[in-house]
Length: 299
Ligand code: OGA
Ligand code: MN
Image 1 (cartoon, rainbow, N blue to C red):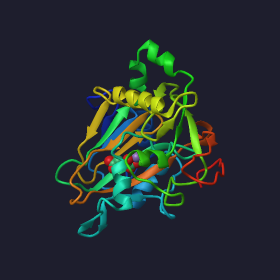
Image 2 (image 1 turned 45 degrees about the horizontal axis):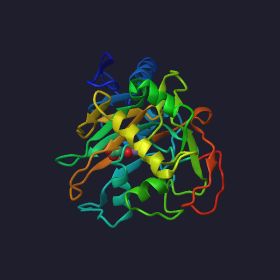
Image 3 (image 1 turned 180 degrees about the vertical axis):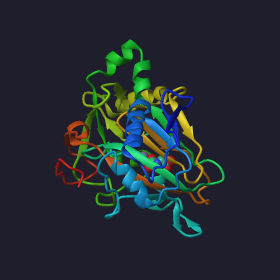
Image 4 (image 1 turned 45 degrees about the vertical axis):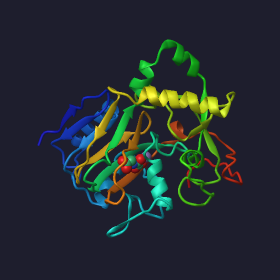
């Protein structure tokens, strides 16, 4: 087997074949790491990793950001139990609906994620794709005037705020992301810590830009998202069970596409923790969160 990277028809993303992610040697790992930095999204068909194998692969990239309990991998699933799916008034339903908005992972935490890994276990008959958008190419494609307008601007990120945008009002302590560590303030233009390329740091978690009215700030960010997430900067992954993808969360946004929620969709997710040197942001009180306990870690 010879590892091969075949770019997909977008400014980011490559399909990697000729590798067995459950049995990686250092040479193949070096190939994958290089491809990850170049393409920002890697697609590995037909890997069928167990949770343990996916965690081991993810650990090649760094520590795992633990999202629930003590488990290093989580099920992103609409199954309440076998044969029953969450209903519109349930918390998990609203959390999954939130994932349908373009976002970066954990920008609402003090330390944003480095990368996201997702693999498919059960997929619906239609819809339920995952889309990834290239924030490097999006930044590059902005007009000179727009680049100038956003240069130096920073934005507050909050999961309380992004869920509120879809009508989901959440109390602090309700789950991962609903903390009292405050809302991180992150520059709209991010320089990648390894490649040095500039990328837009935007997405649905943004609710405020210092110096602007909230409406104006959200309108500006929505306009940037709309512009950024257009061909040729987006890739749509149509899942087959066993596929695995990894995206570089420092320069690529993603979202889930809708599907019929009466059908099951079960994904296995691992989130790779950001390195504090590049992903830690200062935090400020988030009025929806109650008490404020600024933190320098996510735990
Ligand atoms: C995630 C996520 C999208 C999907 O795992 O962070 O946003 O397609 N998933 O399930
Ligand atoms: Mn996500």
